[in-house]
Figure (cartoon, rainbow, N blue to C red):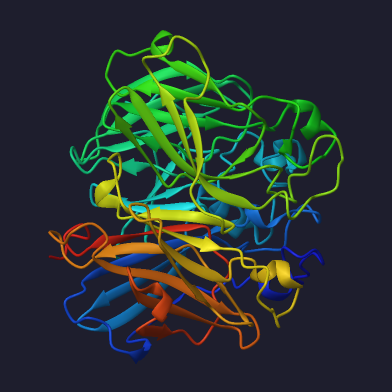
Amino acid sequence: MAHFPANPGFQGAMRPLRLQGDILDVEIEGEIPADLDGAFHRVHPDPQFTPYDPNDQFFNGDGMVSMFRVKNGKVDFKQRYAQTDKWKIENAAGRALFGAYRNHLTDDPSVAGKIRGTANTNVMVHAGRLYAMKEDSPCLLMDPNTLETQGYTQFDGRLAAQTFCAHPKIDPKTGNMCAFSYMSKGYLTLDMSYFEISPSGEVLFEIPFENKYLCMMHDFGVTDDYAVFNVMPCITNLERLEKGMPYFGFDHAMPVWLAVVPRKAGASAKDIRWFKAPANCFTGHVMNAFQDGTRIHFDLPIAAKNSFPFFPDVTGAPFDPIGGMSYLTRWTVDLASNGESFDRIEKLTDQADEFPRIDDRYATQAYRHGWMLVFDVTKPYEGPGGAFMAITNSLCHKDLATGAEQTWWAGPQCAIQEPCFVPRNATAPEGDGYVIALVDNHVTNYTELCFFDAQRVDEGPFARAKLPVRIRQGLHGNWSSAAQLGQA
């Protein structure tokens, strides 16, 4: 008999959905451009069974992959579980067997040594496969059209790293997937590696190195010549696991670093430049990175204090929701310098924001347009669970050339999930196209895939694909053209 925990990660607007199925020809309000042809894949944590650990958290749910196939002005919807080893073992048993988030010490003895990954953090099409990713495990491959699970891969044994990141980047010049691994040689190790995967899916090279300390490494940036890693002290260790504490905790006494790794075969740890931030801070998802002569520009939201209440401060200090608000910021370091100091820090917006996205055709390059979710605490909220549940209530377009911003508020009952840019066509100028995002109504319990003019988001969606259910809060997703799906 299913009884989910009474904590906020499983109740109200965060109640698990656990629904697999298909909807052909989703109801449309407005008009979707007839020449828009591709798919939006995204994923959310959605436990198939009630948690083995009654105190478990949202991030530990099984990966549920959604696909919105857009063609001829219509939208078809498909949703399937990513059938990880964990999912298969528990499905066969008819109950949960793996314990708390990333803590193997809390597992049922019958699953000792099994891969615990949930493939619940990001999905991206590359080399004809859908990569379903969770950063504590190998990459899971799925069919991008049917969502059939194909299994974990080590790329024909050519990848030494045991884990795969959740935020790979595609270099638009080479078509290579740029990715990394942390704890790459085993549980709770400092080992990391940077690697690139060709457009046909082959590992080209891998660069092993060690991190400054053991911590969450969720996102990174890539320039023409370098991979750039923000290292913040959202730390973990064996003692935390043995005590049954949350897997990560934030340490405000530790430094924050930026690591610049050459993107070339044969590079090693001795070639890495480390730059130390002037103050401790919380670093979020990366919008973009690019080179300007010897300087590296690195754009990401930054908060003065911990942004994750579910990974509390190591001191036990209470969560500070205002200090935890993040703001898009540009870090600049100069490779021509002899020291480890930052060259410049520039705050790019006064709006609290997260989930930044760009026109991915300009990844690694100087760019003009960005989109992000805004936390507008001045707006009312009428849904369950308090205002925190609708914290991502607005969508913003940022013009970095002029500084101009356009913002659309989703309304008092709604929250917005991560946006995604879709070019109008393959040759369209930067930022010319659409932004798509799921908007969840926490009162009616419906979700809509909303379509915006990318540079006029303040006008609101010009079309909505209206689902008859509310999809659970997701993490990340990406758009793929019909050609990438093998359907051009």
